[in-house]
Image 1: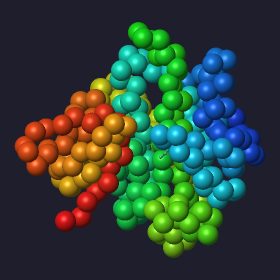
Image 2: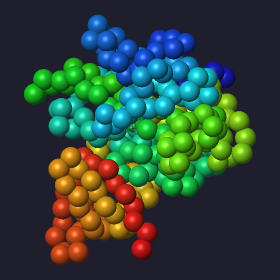
Image 3: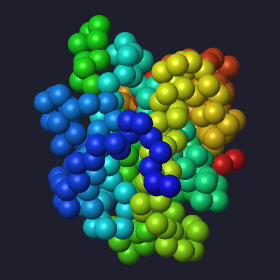
Image 4: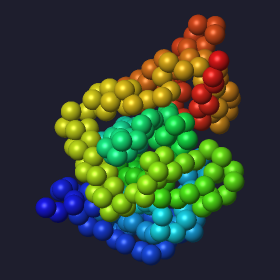
Length: 254
Ligand code: BTN
């Protein structure tokens, strides 16, 4: 039987030995008309992009770096839901290898409290219509601590470090693309609710005391829930419920 059982995700693959960023390459392909599910994948990135202007350290040959082009039938305001769809798919694919993957809001996938994967969603849209979405995913599969600069190694890990064995990249990739397509299809057919339920089960953030840093301010409280658009609901010491759409969460241990 073939490794890959999807209908769309990864059925067309654009492979490059090296790229600045798969998100940038996929964005150009999509602007030129590439179809839903087409993937750009590489062995290394020289300018891998992370969230909030950060870089994604992308050493050669060890990890997984790809971007999927999506053409969802969604209004632009709902596009952020796709990032949570991807987080759920990632956590499930990692759990299939026996690792205890958890999601830290909004979409950091962690093993033992350390980051193992990241998602960067980029959008081309008009006010009323999404042209396309580029869903970029990086997974640390076989990198060791020595493959990252010390400041990254301090908070990151890889699947192989946690499992204590090398991980087969092709197998993991096929599993992940399968999960991704399943959750994308469910999201398309049923909506955000089942995604939100699964996200909550897989989350390490809910119920925790957190410090949230947004572009403008800091907020401290207990992470209670995510709402129907994926925003984090934080109960402050004063008792008010604050809604956070974008930011960084630090989970405080009492
Ligand atoms: C994050 O900051 O957590 C998001 C990291 C996303 C990294 C992936 S690697 C493949 C794709 N191409 C990029 O330049 N970034 C994403």
